[in-house]
Length: 375
View 1 (cartoon, rainbow, N blue to C red):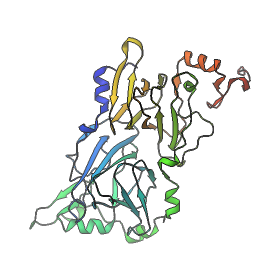
View 2 (view 1 turned 60 degrees about the vertical axis):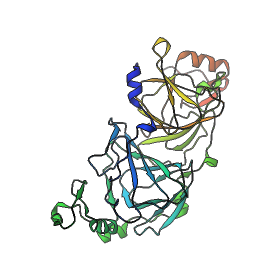
View 3 (view 1 turned 90 degrees about the vertical axis):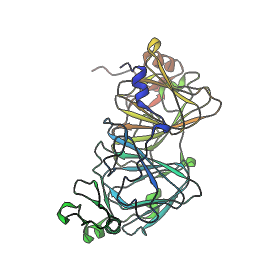
View 4 (view 1 turned 30 degrees about the vertical axis):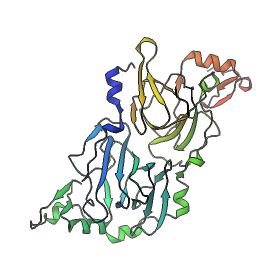
């Protein structure tokens, strides 16, 4: 697959292009919940406002979004049906969970990632002293929306905001009659709320990866080549790492994988393909992505917290021409381990360095591997 310059530009969503919706959810008029920003970057996410701008409407198997809020602002208790991954980009956030928000708490600092369980009420607040920015990965092309805590919906109705059965906001002006009850999304019954699984703080923190927890290792075949000293640290699911000792913190199936990648100064990856759709979220350092090979190459430079969509079958290369390490998150659709496909020259050069892939697709010393068995 050859990507044109215009197609790469369409898929490179710069942070400056993210468009906030300040009334995306039913709780936005509650005290302490306004103002706050909701961004739908890849896919609509769970927005409940039909005017929400979506930067890239294309099925990826997951959605990428973001939230921005000032100090003290809160996102109210709600639950998801698919994965919700929080990436703390800027600022400090306090998570709370349980039907009343008292079941547990955790603090996310910059660089932390946590994968929240499905069917669990959760909310978060900016507990720092500056504006906070949190990116999210949501499972599936259709996330199914969310269920709000019954208390949140009741209080929201007093502000004139209701949720219709189509999961869209209904704004009722002051003094007007409320919508007919049969047109509204019903409250979750108390017995159903009480039946939800309870999660301890210890259980939740096993699903959190902080910067000190990142297990960076050379994890692909091309790292045997000079100048290709990049590394991978798994976070969620089975991604592109080919290191046989790598284990993600979250192993239950989410429909996608999340891995940190680190490209040291002056290093690069070899060009490779994936059979799956992927998104790169850039964190820091100088990082560029070059698509295609030879005279068809198209180059794009990423800024902090830019998002880059990479379609299945496209060839890509990550390059750091700066003076410090570059870090980014790689999100790839699918639960099974992915296999980055390098060209024959990479396999040949790796073999000369006594590195190859075993029959399971994991890195091994080539001198230890028996000849391939005939079929």
